[in-house]
Length: 462
Image 1 (cartoon, rainbow, N blue to C red):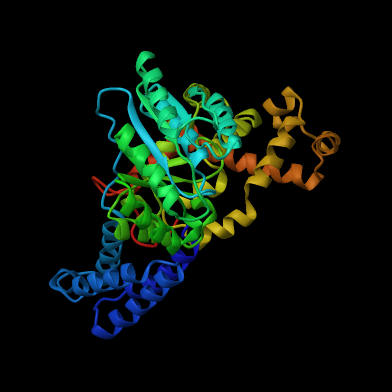
Image 2: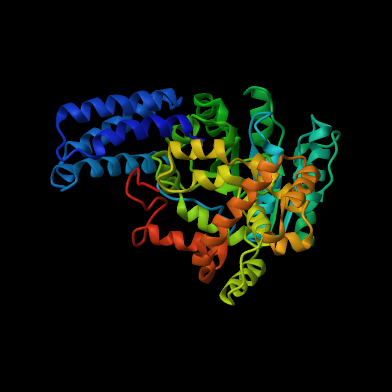
């Protein structure tokens, strides 16, 4: 997400960040570039106008002029305004009510509502330790009910059955009653979508909201629809009492206009982002961290949180102890590290959050992508246990056998062995910190005290 916007903003802001003095001319030129970049990212025009004016007022004010590094302060002003436009801080779901707390999902058909219900159920179960029941009040699509049942089983939450001949209000009330009897914390209610906003749809969902009085009503919208996402959100917000927005398919949106427009146009916070197809691909929306990513400064806090969630602590501790005892980092350890990186969203997800990567991330991804990581795993799996533990025994005959078994070439095997040697050297340095987990925690040193999402200086070098 935001690749295009990041490239454009990084280029224009890099020119000004090194300026010792800001003038009306260089501010004017840069603001014109920023304006163009935002419009190309499909950010709504009123949002762009307000954004540029706020940056201009602050840039020509005392705040920047008195600074010893006005160019860098200007970049900070742009970052602060991005944060303000997107909502200042993360807003979690408010579940502080007598259980069950009802969360209602609304949105157009095809926005990813049903999948988002499952993702949110998993998020609440795993990260907020809540018991969850899901129910579908979509009486127009039997497939949606079956899909939700399958997803509920997949993420390990309760599913309340419903059918197309029932009334949506009766379905919702039945689920809430069942959840109360079973002492369930949260009921997530999936509702019917349409291909466009219409009176019948708004009437039905309005009646449903009035009947069940959900503590949260979330509007689910496809980020790839750009400005339309913001306009549709406004239509729903006018008809319903929305408490927040979930942006889906952000991994497929290179522009990011929806994220910058929705909050301004609806006045409602973006609470979550869908960042992939899997049920764990839901991130809490942190405006400060996202602003850092947009400006190419990375998002170290999210990276650390992801590491804490996904890295196998036992394996990390075992590796730490092994290297502390002077034992070498072998190919089985290398495979474990590859798998842990995969659990953290692959090389793309990792590099997107590293500070100062910018265009380097794209270049690096061409060299080392998730496909090539899968190939490395296949090569290691084609080795015998002895070869994995003692890579030095791998001679030419063994290389031929390994290449044949993994469907690769001998040069691929040689490349892996070379990468392993490099990783071995790095692990000697990181060994005392716990491998991948230590590396992630070590990144906290990149952040200023009480830091936000970025931490390295703007456009810092890796």
